[in-house]
Length: 448
Image 1: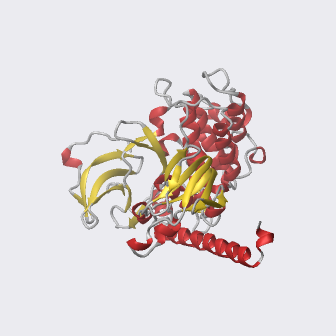
Image 2: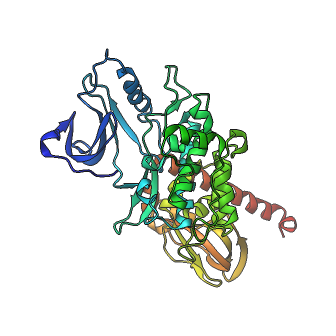
Image 3: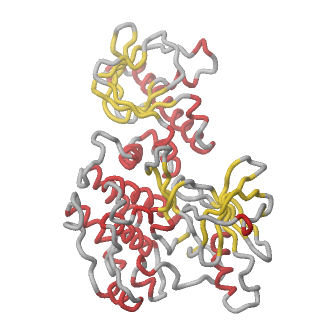
């Protein structure tokens, strides 16, 4: 979140049990603070309604209270690596507040200036992650309705490079599962689709438009529509097509332009039908090299995510769990002839073959060929004691392959639900191999 200076006399020492460290930012009705959770020993962000806000019976107070209630209703509900977690909501009478995951960094608004533009492939990658996150949010019954650069947090590495993104600020969200009356005609005009400006019913395609507008801004350094007055801006949104991106910046292809402009279609029916379609179109731009790669040879997270989706081993993994695998796994490419495991070698890691093939040898005789989606080394990994953690076969790469490998330590860092899905994947593999062994014993000619 962007940091602003604040004098010490307006900085509270505590908010509830949380020790306030410094002010992070401020909005129209709230302040955001960095604080320490003394019980967990972690830093959190606290968004507090201003104490000087109108009392509950004052005109207009219900409007701001509903913004708080919209986010408070999502506390503990949204669990996605690209969504800022809302940890708690405390409805103190004078100044209610939200406790959120703290994300050090800046918002994507920082990169909307023409002198700070990110590489095109990175912009598309960040948009893909936002699309996947907002797709997850929509499946929870929530439409964000205020997707804009200031509500997308850029996660930075120690060197200040953008490595990830997180969606935040659900104060304008429409909760399709809530019974309470909710606010309409909310959002930021520069990124709002026509149907949202009119105050009509919206679905995920309204947020798809908004993310398309963010993508346009990040690419060109200017929003798709810009005017000095609100009425003029609304006229553009209703009636004028955005200028093509081709020619506004070097490297913009017709394919990239087409994806962004489709998301910005005036009619919801002309946009991408859902988040899945939009995300696949974005990742397809990278896979088909329709955006120039800033770092040649780098495998982007979107490619890894879609590769995992195609593997049978991960067929029962949901999107959130696949993202865990993308982040925790070790991805490595091995040349033909490389010995992945040797008989008698002790090991506790296992590989899942993402691309290529390996051959299995026992006593120098080839007994199997394993390809994409197959796990190898899992018996040594699953062994209950060191004596059983020795490989019983030689496994060599027969076609250059890319593997996804894990150790007990990396598996332990996954969520319990993700670990459970790994266990089920191993059970399916073992059952399939037992069945194959049974067939080989009883019907050797059929197997051969």
